[in-house]
Each structure stands twice: as C-alpha cells, then as structure tokens.
Amino acid sequence: MWGVSGARMLYICAKVPPPTSRFKHNSAPPLLQRALVIVPTYNERENLPRLVPSILSRDARLEILVVDDGSPDGTGAMADEIAAAERRVHVIHRAGKLGLGTAYLAGFAWGLERGYEVFVQMDADFSHDPAHLPHFLNAIEDYDLVLGSRYLEGRVTVVNWPIARLLLSYYANVYARWVTGLPVADATGGFKCFRREVLATLDLARVESNGYSFQIEMSFRAWKLGFRIGEIPIMFVDRDLGESKMSKSIVREAIWRVWRLRFLSAFGRLRSARPGSPAIPPPAA
Image (cartoon, rainbow, N blue to C red; front, side, top):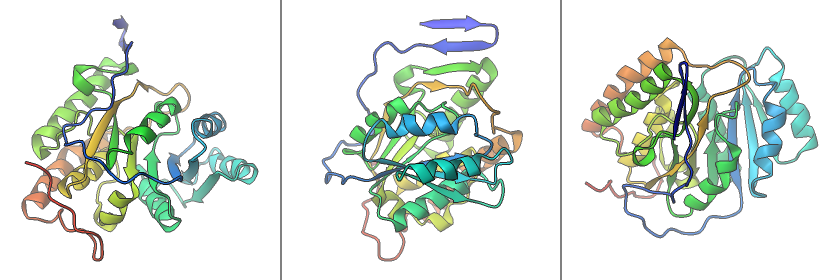
C-alpha cells in the first residue's frame, strides 16, 4: 500500500518474507554467543539514550560498540556514562569527523581483537530499527554476510524519504549492480551483519571507500572471495531527530568508486585473502 503526502512516500509491508539470497544456501558451523553491534556517532546525543536499551533488549548475546567522532554535542561523554553503567556497552573516541567507513573499520578491528563471532553495523538515528536484530542473528547462522534490504523482491520498504532521495537510492543500486555485477537487491544499505570469518579474511587495510560506497565495497569484496551473501527485508525509517550525514561529495565518491572496484577485480586485486587466512573458493558463476 502506498501513501503519498507532498514529497514524502510511505510503503507498508504487511507480511515479512523469510530471508532470501541469490547464492546457494549451504549449511555452516553454528555460531557462538557474542555479537557486536557497531554504532558510529556524530552528534547523536538525542538518539543514543533511546537506542542503547532498545538494542540490548533484543538478545542477550548483543553488545554495543559506540564509535564517536568527537561529537561537539557531547555524544561521546554520554556514551561513556552509559558504558559505565552497562557492561555490554563499549566506546571508542576518535579525534574528529573521520568518516563512516573508517568508523566501521575501527570497530571491526576492535571486535576482531576481542574475539566476537558476529558483527552488526547500524546507524544511530533509528533509520535502522533494532527490532530487526533477531532476524539478522537468525539469518547469519546460514550465511556469511546478511544485508538488510529496502528493495527486496520488487518491494520498496522506505518511510518518510522525499521522492528525490528515494529515487537516488534506488537507482544508485541499479547503477552499482550494472557496473560491478554484485547480485544483491540493496548494495548501498548500511544495516548489515558479518560473520567473523569474512572480516578476518578481507584485507581491511585495502578497503578504500569511506562514504556511500563503503557499503558497496565491503559486500563486493566479500562476494569476490566466495562468501555466501543473504538478504532480509527491513523497514527503513528516515531519522526524526538530528541531521542527515548525506552530502554531494559522498554521492560523487560512489559514482566513480564502483568503476575502480570493477577494474581492481578485473586485474585480480580483490580475490587475495590476507596471509595465513583460509582458502576461499571463488563465487559461483
């Protein structure tokens, strides 16, 4: 059902289908009991006190790592207060606004050093609903990387985006699939779940993207190394507090970065795992 009011669009999905994937659905070893939710923040003081309990209430295995980029509004100090009272919350402070991609990479490195088996990345502004977290934990038992999709099986599950922003996102995915061949419905979404093996095998030091294209690059590298990718439907709700971090420079980076990924892949620069990592079969044709 569609509802249009001015420049805003709403799609309501009455029935959530099971996780789907274009890849072969294979059995995999069961996961252990620690999952880290990485939440980058910059001026999210209004959202963080509501987000943390919402995440932690979804599953006892979940812990949170807040990666704060020196928020002028005091988000970092608030995160420290929350962590002092809740042992499942951790905080990394960075000197300034260094970008979304590097925030996730810092969180991945922190979690790998501490032995987490599963890594979830999500926004701090409630555009990613914590209610989906149990769905990710269920799906990651069968896949190596699970993407939260806004465009699965022809449905658009986005709330309160202006038409122009929705079309930009939708056709950015069409463009990314056309250039890279990445066979997923939503390559640009930021609500994702990784098995430890994916992040330990990827050479994270070679990840170049830092904005909108970071999501594409991480999925593309995992796909080229033969990891199994699944998608689950999510409802994406535009933030109601704070300001969007989207900018024209982020969009420009995504436009040319996908071509660089294609060329790197063509010259065999994306298939090599780090020394000492297990051999990974190539993706299915």
